Every structure is written in C-alpha cells, then in structure tokens.
Length: 138
Image (cartoon, rainbow, N blue to C red; front, side, top):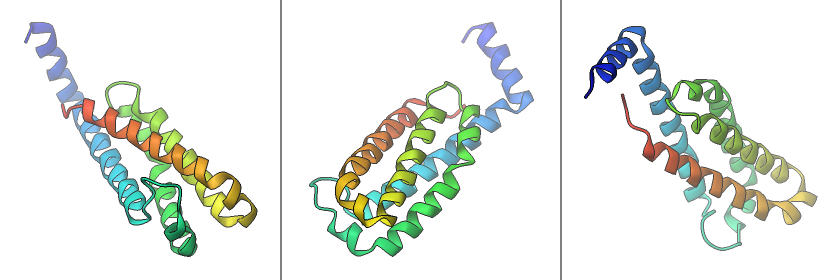
C-alpha cells in the first residue's frame, strides 16, 4: 500500500466515509435479500407461469409496497457507496417494483404487461447482485 492510499484510508476513516459506505452497503444488501426472497416465494424465476403470484395478489401487493417503502430512501444512501453503480440500479429496481404493483392492481394490465415487468425486475436484481458482489467493505 502506498503512502497516498494509507493517507486516503486514514482520512476516510476519520471523516466517517468508511462507516457511511459500509452502512449503506449493508442496507442495500439486506434490501436485495428481501427482493430475492420475494422472487423465490412467488416462483418468479423460470417459466412464464406466474400463477402463484396471481393467486396471492393481495399478499404480493403488500410485499411490493413494503419493498418499495424500504427501497426509496436507499437511492440517496446508495450514493455513499464507493462507485456510482448502485444508486441507479436501486432506482431501476424500484421502478420495476412499482410497475409490477400497478399491474397487479389493474386486471387488464395483468395479462399484457406482467411478464415483461417481472423480467425487468429479475434482470435489474441480477445486475444489483453483481454490482454488490464487486464492492468490498472498506
């Protein structure tokens, strides 16, 4: 480690940047696990049959509302994570979650748009998981 890196690390530690980075990274990781649980519980990976999701629309809407509620403040917190990848991905997932919730509320949209929205949610979540895997605690 060079002197420059050592000084930079010490300044980050003293200014609290390291703590903010680690806290934001932990919060986004926990939120990502919540999304993964939602995707797993409703069997949204794999085929195009979303029967379990459509049979449990009330619970799914409640879960999506909770995910969105927890995720909105993470957009700003994710900016504290070193690098600039995470915040746009959180925002992208939130858009997919809100769209899915809207499509579940409107039966005419369920048949037309739900498949595309679930694909967007899955791909956005995979991108977030990949980006989180690349980032280390400071």
